[in-house]
Image (cartoon, rainbow, N blue to C red; front, side, top):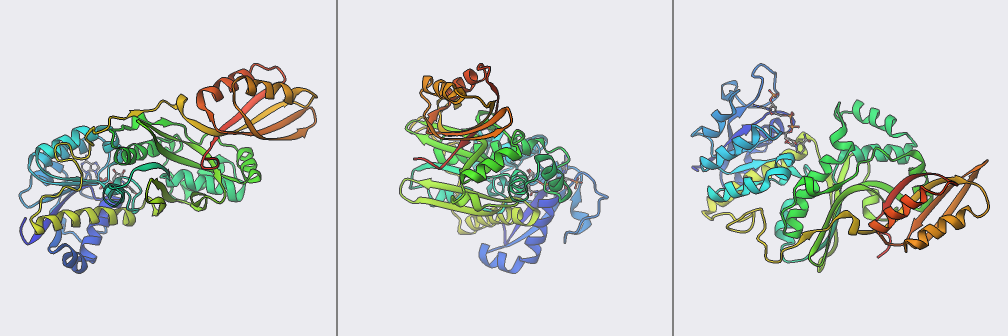
Length: 438
Ligand SMILES: NC(=O)c1ccc[n+]([C@@H]2O[C@H](COP(=O)([O-])OP(=O)(O)OC[C@H]3O[C@@H](n4cnc5c(N)ncnc54)[C@H](OP(=O)(O)O)[C@@H]3O)[C@@H](O)[C@H]2O)c1
């Protein structure tokens, strides 16, 4: 690289345009901090005729992204087009050309990280991805650098803004999931097809990326146990409130000896927990380290400008390492950067073996002895009940209960047997309760 670090953008949508604007508008500060000027010299888009509010001359645009990756006037490739292909092939080509890559593409990283990091290592170039999880929230670098000396015990994150917005409206305004989703779509927080958010796919991709770093084992999105928020009802939200909890969609990873559990599901957390105050479309990750104790990183998990901050931070980091002449090693292990070396091989723990507390909502006949029958089923499966609450409605009672910590396998067996009791009309909800009991 010369006096100027020349950036080729793959994509100029929400994030790409914000990156181009930030590099231009904050140019003086950026060049002082990076020790070199950073300029956009090439941009690939799909539609050359689309009007764009970016300070980049029209002549630098192309609709062939390989023009960007192979251009001699591009030192760093910034992939902000999204999707698996052609993003994957373009990144691999950039590595072959000896160019480092900055990406915001969680989908790609959560499915093909090993191939990408191995190719980066083979080309002795870097792949940085701070923007891929948590938009503008610094998460990757704090985990990889600041906390590298500690052992992470657990992290719990609200990493999807759409579902957090929906759950906030359900909690604070008493709306149904459908009403809250329609509102999120009206405000542009939710896609026309919101399934990736509502079913937890987006959160699972982010959980996989964070867990890989925090627990030194390769985790793909498909390895993550996943439940979305579609089954959450206003009744669950109301009972959670009465019991002193808040319902959130959490991405959780926790280490237990040589095992790591990585999962995404709705959970009740105590109303006093720091994550309970993460409202609207904000994101946060609460990390517990063996020595550092608890810490929380909070902010805007999406949006062009916040996400561009992370992308530009990565580009500056690359520029600095070039100006200082040092080979970067931000992404870890020399032979296998980003895919941790297996010093202490760990195994992903199946969901049946995890332990949690559980909230359960049932409808049952409002008759003497029903509660005793239910309690017996719990006892048979060694699941201990912490509290029970019953509301009568004519012939039928709604029974809400919270268990002590129990194994998932035992709890599922308990639910199966409860459904066989003829006085139990329905087990309508089962939600894990996190961070309440040690
Ligand atoms: N938006 C966020 O808040 C956010 C937050 C964190 C991470 N991310 C990640 O950042 C990436 C970009 O997101 P975004 O919201 O900026 O997406 P976007 O607004 O849809 O922009 C995508 C850009 O890529 C271009 N593009 C797509 N396919 C192309 C192809 N085959 N050839 C050339 N250009 C192509 C599009 O061109 P046209 O403009 O011509 O259509 C567009 O400029 C994604 O990986 C996303 O997951 C986004």
